[in-house]
Amino acid sequence: ADNTIIVMKLIDKTTEVVLDGLTFTGGNTKALHQPDGGGGGLVVVRSRATIRNCVFERNAAGAGGALGAESNLGTLLISNTVFHNNNAKWYGAISMNYNNLVIESCVFSENNGTESRAGAVGIAGGTANINNTIFYKNYATGWGGALWNETATGVHTEISNCVFYGNIADGRSRSIENYNSGNDLVVKNSIIW
Image 1 (cartoon, rainbow, N blue to C red):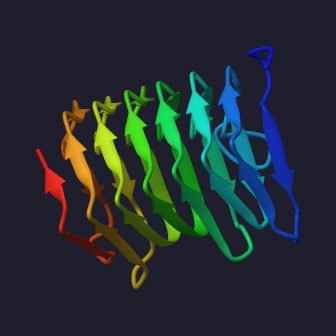
Image 2: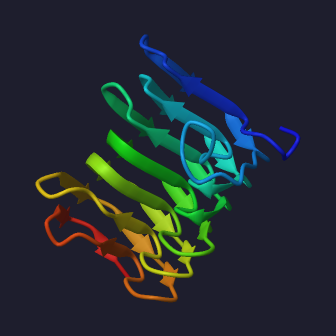
């Protein structure tokens, strides 16, 4: 990328798109919301996608420095993928709005939420399952050094077999901020230190 545009956009893809073994680097967008913003590396809107064995590094956006996703069809699956040194005002690596999300066996390291929420992942609506994933040295100037969970009442977010280490938030919740008290957040078999 030339550091002035989103590296890749998937918009209105009803047939599943599989992204395997790609590197997304140098994307940059200042907008906060889809479809014209968020996700300096990749934007996924109203689409079906699987992301596996990829690297997202040094991308920037208003929200979701590496990946911005909104109102997608089915479940967005992200597996065996590294998110390193991505930056955004909100949600340093991933911004998820109204999606079903599965993150499996990924690494989030040194991502930054520079003006508010979540150094690594922001979830705002939908259902999320995060398994066997490492969150290491992510930073937020506000709340949720690694993860910001702001889903609607009655929605389920489950984190299992994960490690949260060395994450920092200037506000509160060094690792996980569960913002809406009506959320169903379950954390099990995980290490947070």
